[in-house]
Length: 295
Image 1 (cartoon, rainbow, N blue to C red):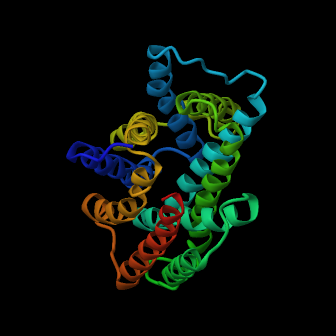
Image 2: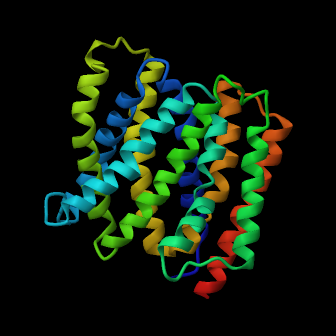
């Protein structure tokens, strides 16, 4: 991969900002929409820029090929379930907590990869990273100001959503030889198919009278935070590689906390800051171990 330029770093920061901004926009969306509707509109609107790119680049979408069970499974685990869990959880907790909890995906990925892959085993550096990150999560849950008996379960559901992302990523390894745009477009199609009957049966969104801010947020979540963000991710992966793109994990929780404060005036307690620092340090150790292995 070529040496990263200033433009590459700007694109990386923009991607981190877009993904971090998803959390406060999810919070605003919950003012008018149910969690199933939010998940459905995210995948439906998010599929538009990805499918348009595939059409422009003449990339064949294989959503209904012989590999459709893989696309459907990944769509369910990597999109449907986490999008629902996050939307449900954010309704009851601050969006900055969701940003921090979702940033733990590299830590849970390290644990699951140790058991379900052949070449991603624990070493000392990874173990230290996971332990520090785990301390950060536990310490965050001890903050009675922002996590209490009324929203404790909601916070756990967000953490479960982050784990679903990891499981979906492991499943994606089964079809890793296919183009990223094809895989993303196919799983978005299947996620939309899965959510369509659920949203019609459970929430009937046509009966909503949504607020303007919620409507703007849900459109932003779909088109920008889901669709355009994935396209930016493709660009970074192609130009700069996985190690460079993985740096976004450090930025998302930081931006998520800042944006939650700016747009929603959310509390930033001492325990939130300590937990954030611990999780970022944990991610650093895990990423450092992976980088050394690749080099």
